Amino acid sequence: MTTASQELSGRATRTGQGFWIVAAISFLYLFAVSAPSPLYGVYAAQWHFSPTTVTAVFGVYALTLIAAMLLTGSLSDALGRRPVIAIALVLQCVAMVLFMFASNVEWLYAARLTQGFATGMVTAAVAAALVDLQPTGRPGLAALVNAAVPAAGLAFGALGSAALVRYAPAPTRLVYGLLLAGFVALIGLALGRLPETVANRRRARLGSRVGVERPLRRAFLATVPVLVAVWALCGLYLSLGPSLALKLEHSRNAMVGGTVIFLLCGLGCVTGIVVHNWPPRRVMLLGCALLGTGVLITVASVITEVPALLYVGTAVSGCGFGAGFLGSFRTLSGLAVPQHRSELIAAIYVVAYLSFSVPGVIAGVFTTRVGLYDTAIGYGLVVAALAWIALPATARHCYRADTPAS
Image 1 (spheres, rainbow, N blue to C red):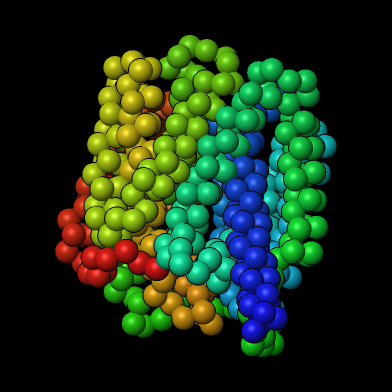
Image 2: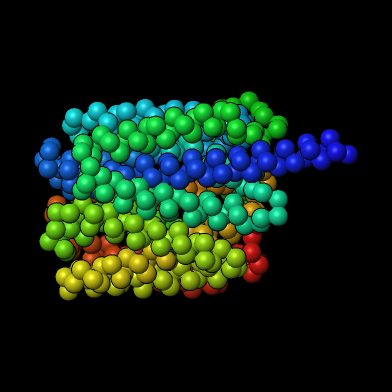
């Protein structure tokens, strides 16, 4: 009995350690995603490129990520979570090296492309591993971490990178050197400490199915308007948010640009923590209302050229971002069986990252034609309309189990 108890205790310890290792991987991945955003001003000054180039570099990342998810979305269901995560971490290290030695915009494209593929490869595997490794007696923790930790990574990546631009030497190299060291450490932890959760492995094939099982399609479709609204807003902030803040403030301080991303994503993380025990439908409804309101305040800040309103609108929108994505993810993540879980999660992220990338690239094109302010106003009104349209749609058609999902 003692030996059996010790084995169970050891297994629980390894599972708990593995859960938080995967959470750390998720955090650092998203930290690396937003780290280049405050640096775009530095790159543009050095290499003389336009806002269209900024959003194109951003779009390359997001579209490559989607391609990787379509290609490898269910790969971890076949090969196991650990090998897929480890390979993706190695690719992320390559991306950090490319960023470190970037000498022109072509290097940025190569770095973002590699980073996008690495992130797309790891996204579904990490999300599924968190659900697999969720500690017994902590229902809902995996969904909370899946929603809150990426938002925290985006927030601190932007703010940390902006701080290095402002206060440290060689900001275009230092942040990537630090991230490279972090990813190397995580490779060691993943190989040495991460338990494998896929017992019945099967032959792997590329082009794995990314989709939604028929019984889940109604619930999935009900979440699409929310996913589109929250991630379209996030795409605007990561691509053009720093430029908008700097122009409103008439400033060149990189911390200004980093702060708006930190507000959006940081408050998204905090909101997710606060409401994670609420029923999923209520969380999504709250997210839609806050998002729609916050974006209209942001639009008002641009029209009136009052910077304070930008920060208020960003804060309210950030709360909507966190609640909207958490509610969507919790509604769906507990419904799939383990053998198809990463396929469903990949489908969620395909919708999210299409919304994240395509509108941002279009906004970059419009910025060079009609200007940053008019583009931000038009983009904001579209996102606000999506949020308010999603509100009644969510109330009518969302998954009706008004109890917390596991």
